[in-house]
Length: 66
Image 1 (cartoon, rainbow, N blue to C red):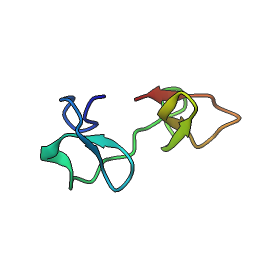
Image 2 (tube, one colour; image 1 turned 120 degrees about the vertical axis):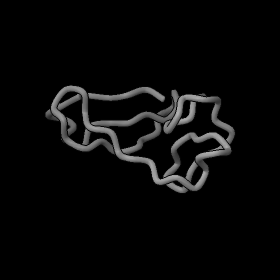
Image 3 (cartoon, helix red, strand yellow; image 1 turned 45 degrees about the vertical axis):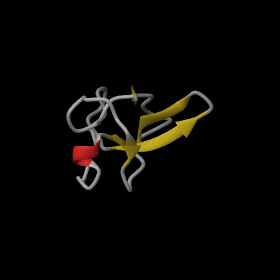
Image 4 (cartoon, rainbow, N blue to C red; image 1 turned 120 degrees about the horizontal axis):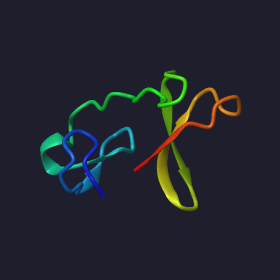
């Protein structure tokens, strides 16, 4: 798993549930914009793991895998 801030190996999760390395454990992670419709995304979890899902779902099915 990679740090959402820098791409290094993540060692823990932030308070927002985002994977981060030791150097970014207290960093506030920016919510990404949907790659399809550009609205904010929300952190979600499925049986396959965590991912960023579009808040406009079901009208937009944009997602970013973690």
